[in-house]
Each structure stands twice: as C-alpha cells, then as structure tokens.
Image (cartoon, rainbow, N blue to C red; front, side, top):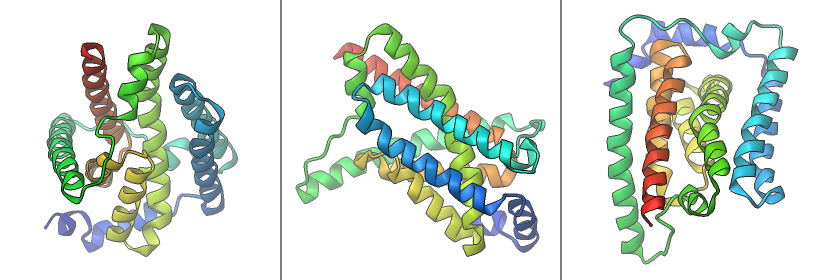
Length: 236
C-alpha cells in the first residue's frame, strides 16, 4: 500500500525527471570520496571528538566542491525549497515513528544476538566516548552530531545516492540506500533501527521533494538520541 502511494506511475515519472538533474560522474566521485573520508578518518585520529570534527567538515567541503563544479543550481542539486504549510505534522509523526521503531528494533536485535549466543556491544560507541570526553569535546560532538552530520548524510544518501540508484527502480533504490546507510554507522545492534530510519527519511523526502524535511527529522532524532546518551553516560 505505502509503495503504491509513493511510487505510482505519474510520481515515478516526476522522480525520474528530478533525478536526472544530478551530474553522474561528479556524483559518483563525491560519494566515493565521502566514503573514503569516513573510513580513513578513524584510523588517523584516535579521539572521537577529532573524528566527528574532521569527517563532517571534510564531507561538507566535498559537497561544496561538488556543487561548485556542477553546472546546476544548489536548489536543483540538493532540493532545498521553502517548506510548505502543514509540513510540521509530517515531521512530528516521522520523529515519533522513528523513535518507536528504533526502540523496538534495538530490543529485538539484542534479544536475537543473545539467542544465537553472539556477544555484541549493545551500547552506542558514542556513549563510551562521551564518558571520557571533556566539556569542549562534548560541545564539538553535539554540534557535529545534531547539525552537520544530518545535513551531510541527507545530501549524500537521500539525494545523491538515491538519485544514482534510481535507474534500478524506485523500491530497489530505497532498500539499497537504506541498507548502505545502516551499515555505514558500524553499529551492529543498531542496523535494523537505522535501516527503518533511512527508509522513513527517504520516503519523507520523496513525498515532499524537499530535503529540509528529512534534515529536520534527522536533526531532531539525533538531538534526542544525543541527550539520552549524554544523560545515561553522566549517570554511569
């Protein structure tokens, strides 16, 4: 039912026109460099605060270079548009749905790994780092997690990667981008929850055709997650 709503033929035609705006070679190069950046930064910096400072700023520089060398306007590449009236309830509903699914997925993921006898770290890597971080590092991590990471990830995954994979089909592109987003966080227990998070953000983007909507949802969920992790780390 939900796929019939989002991927009916006339809407599919609009998406195909809209995705054709992306310059393919530059987009692939940007995504590859973005992946390399996020893979190699942890090997160069042992401090999570430095990792979370260098990686997002590097990603934003890459995206800036991509926009500079492409011939299209930033509004066409990134689909930044004015928010329409009535979009607030979509943002609130999306955040609620993401939090609910994340909680359910995390619980059953932990139970599954216990059932199969595998020992995995149930705690987010961020929690351990926050316990040992100084106040300036906590501020840097917070700003990066809540503001810069959602902007970079939404442009790369929801706009660029989906646009490149769209020729495979709308549904395939949705599942592939969601799967790649979930494993890119290197958090085994969180993969199912991150997968549904990515799906909801992508569907919200396709429904509104405005990247500000998933960016806002991503920022709010990261903010709530950061507050939760920070409070639990302080209590520990």
